[in-house]
Image (cartoon, rainbow, N blue to C red; front, top):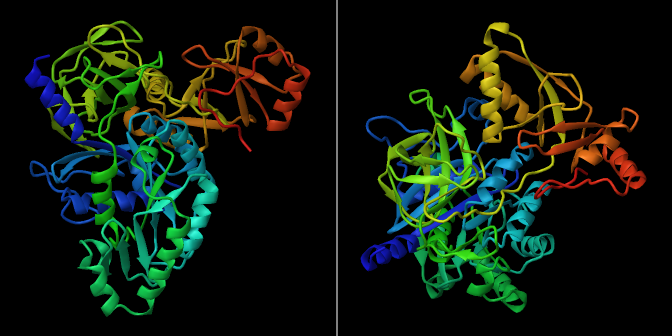
Length: 533
């Protein structure tokens, strides 16, 4: 690489901010995503997307099941520019049943925003995802949302988050007014007061008046005095912002706002631009860090087919970790050793796509693929390199799935293979019996609803499912499988497409009892797994 090319690559990598938003369902994650796009100028009105080439693009929730249920069931990439910074925002599902999709996203980002409901605080699903992010040492921001409604008072929220998350928090903004009577925030970076006025419907930017601290004190009322006293108390026990501790994921900047009314959203975007890390060297499977200016290497963290009926193709979402991406380049899949051409590449904005000729570390690119490319694959130039495996949660729900139309058997099989490769569900088989009926496994039953709908709409396969009585699974080996199957019908063994053998149990009690009786049997959680309660 020439000196000029290397300089450009490092400059472009420094402009990237790649982050995810993680939360519990109904915390307002998709709303916050829309409002960040609004403040960045990527949309002209919240709830819509700026038209591209005369067509209206989709927002973050584009699947029919998402529109019908009003929840996110798949992660979405939204790439946009603001103040000379390129943001790659990855909107993640909030529902527990789609946690695996969020785990894949966390493998691809450099930072994450934890979205907290002002009334409910940290809920179990948020805490689980936080623990994963913390284990990966991902820098985190906390945004306390819905402050326009009744909820915890700010000092109580700081105590709650500090105790629940186990990390120090540094307030970057502080609310003026109680939850439900929200007037604005104090920006701790310069002491200014941002006073907000609601805009009807919240579809446009909130009317905002920025005052210097001394002017706000003069014009302020009782709510300002209360906020000022609270900040004095916070200053006595809260840590000061430490950039190095934040970069290690050991300290959390905290902001308050209301995504529904656009309060504090612009400040969050500014803080992400200022504090979120740019593309950094990433660990490979031998534990060493791969510099961003090394030859091209990228991680496939998501595969999605049939995103747009106009295309009906299969797209791999790749996070560029090092080197420069050029459309048409030939790369090697480290898992298979085969080469493939990245001829059809796009920047992605929800369901919409625009061709892209080059991209840099930190970018997320959608590449149309036809070969054997799966979630977790590493694509590279030059010497073989592999990034660590992406975590997989232990399945907790199982169903059999049957094709109801004998004339669509080929489509049924092809659809199952596609959904398995995408990670929508795990498709299992009973290797130790003659039962040919496929078994689907997932974190929760909503995954099966998505699988059934996609088989119908994308492959024309009408199917039926039947619940199985399994609620806990552990990875085992051939020797362990023999003992599991001999356990008086209380257990079973399924095999995944990658050869992993899963011992399944009807509940945690049976699992623990079996483990006590058979201490030598291999019973392991899957990578990143969490046992059911």
